[in-house]
Every structure is written in C-alpha cells, then in structure tokens.
Length: 464
Image (cartoon, rainbow, N blue to C red; front, side, top):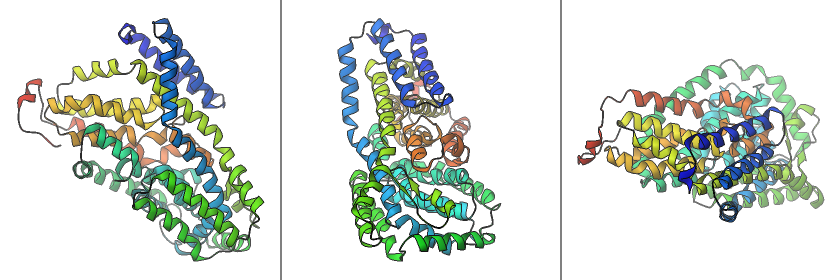
C-alpha cells in the first residue's frame, strides 16, 4: 500500500512536520502541539491513500508501550536532580569544585571530566543531570557564561551515546550493523582522536578568556553561602561515586537513577535533617536553594518530577510520530532510492551519514537514525566491499551525536528542562556534536579509491 504514496507526498509530510514543530518553537507553545498536528496530518495523508486507521493506531500504541521505561526514566531524572540539590550532594560538588579548580582552564577541564564520566555512566542525559549540573554550578561560580559551559558539557556528555560500551544506543548501533564493539572502537578512533583533540583545543582557546584565578571574591561568597545553607562534607560525594560505579558494572540506567533518587532521600533526611514533607515536595514539585546568595539560589533550582511531565508528553509525541513514519513505510522507499545509485565508498559514507542525520532530525530521536541506516545500508556496504565497522562508525559520528543540537529533539528537551537553557543557546558551543558530522562528510571526499558495483565479487574487505 505504501507504494501508492508518491515521492512528492512523502516529502510534503516531512516538510509539514518540520513546519508544525518550527511554528511551535517560534510562537513559544509546547512542541507537543507541533507533534500532534504532524501526527494528524500524516494520518490524514495515509488514510487518503487507503491505509486503515486501526493498524496505524495499533502501531502507535505498541511504539508508545515499548518506550514506557523511558517515560519513567525522564520523570525520575526530575526527582533525582531536586533530591541531589536538597541533600547537599550537588552543593558539595560545587563547593569542592570551586575550592580545587581555581586557576584551571575550567572550560577545558569540564569537557574532559564530562567525557570521561560519560564513558563510565553510559548515558548522556544521566551524566548531564548529575555531574553536568554540578559542573554548571561550579562554572557559574567562576563567572563563565552558562550557555557556553553547557555546550561544553553537552559535547563531553554525548560521548556516552556514541562510544560507551554500556550505552544502550551504542549497543543498538552494534546490533543494527552486526559489528563487535572492539572492531567498531578500532574504526571509531580514526575520527574520534582528531575530532576530540580539535574540540579540546577550541575549548582551551575559549576558556583562556575566562581567568578563574581572578574570581576569588565571588568564589568565597558562593562557598560561604553554601556552608550556611547546607551541612557540607566530602562524604556527600560518595553518592555520585556510587552512581558511576553502578553504571560501570552494567546496572541499567533506570535502576541506577532510581537508586540515586532513593540515596538523595536518605541523605536529605540524615545529613540535612529535612522533614519528610519537604523531601517529598522537593522530589515532586521541585527545589529552590535557601542560601544567603540569591544568585546561588537561582543555580540551586530544579522543577522536580512535575517539571518533566510536559517532556514526557513531548517524547511520547515524538515516538508516536516516528512509529507512524516507520510503520507506514514512508521513509524506506526514500532510503532505497538513495542506496540504489551509490557507486563509491566516499559517496556511501557521505549518504549514510546524511540520512542518519535526517532521520534523527525528522523523528526527534536517535533510535530511527541508528536502526534504519544500520539495516538498510548493511548490504550496500558489503556489496561495495566496505567493512560493517565503518557503517557503525559513520552512524555514531552523525545521527547519534547531533541529537542535542535540535530544540525539538528528545535529548535537547530534557537538557532544557533540567538546566533552563535551550538548544538554540548552547548548541553553537556543543562543538563536538557538529564537528563529528562535518569531519565525516569532509573525510568522505578524500577517499580516493572508487568502488564500482562489480567490486562486490572481490574477496578483500576494506576498512577505512
């Protein structure tokens, strides 16, 4: 049935989707409305072409049901951030960070610290909602612009989704391309090393403009306010350390964040002596710091579980839309047309990356941008004699890493809700996230060897 939909109509659906989402952003209304309009328009087009309503609704329902753990995870992040603030865990991380990182190029240090933590935690959003929040507070204490600092933290944090062996998205990439982690890692270092070094250099140059040694007065004011507002101790740092250890040993992110939230409750009661009523309200409707510094109080703020409800609805809208695209076959014919005319390795890498990016952008999530290119380009890579690990690398360097750059993407929405800073503000400074796809596309033009269709008969497999 999907063959009856013309190419023009397919592009019309995608254009309408982007229009509805863009108008939601432009008029400052919930992106959920944009998704609802997109779903309604797409469903109408499909219905006019003979698709039955019941199978489409069933596909959407199943897609939403499969992601139910994601909704819980998002809500728990809101509660955990609030409890880590009320318990003094994040304030302690800020306090000791201010104490020991004076004189450092903080922007470069934040990038390196976040990227290392991300590899161990295996989740970009989890890293940003814990260590990232603390680094954001420390950086503000040193006078760094929040949007620049958040862009830096996002760059480091999203190495989790791209590279961590315990990342769900990384393992999805490996499964979709039928590649082993060790082989994929070997291929990924060819782009990772130059991009990481270049990104670190950019942050070093930007960070050099901010002298953390000259902000002693502000640092002392913040530290004094933190001491008056919380019972601080190095022992409070045990909770984030345990969280990282649990991630390293392979505990699922949902369980890790749940234990982190329970730990926040316990510490809030025992160390900060907060009443149960305040602990519960912090978790549910948010927490605001109560220190002598009003500026610091604006940093020590979280909306709790309640603030993440809208995000859950938006994520559900994104999932419903992407499920509708995939179940109706709107996307596959377009990809097949692109795949059929590829004649060289460079063109193969370039188009794989561009399609992976396009799918991540249009479906508002990385999953489709990983699975569809992984499945549909796999045979083409084999046909042209290019190793599947190059396919895994290309997808992770493009569709996976660009996710937080777009305001309507699930990741950007969560980051914005946690930090109060939009993707439009931090995006230009999330250098790693756009240097990777640029480098991948540029690299594809420098591949000299041309592979014609008959090369599929060759036994030699190339690993670029």
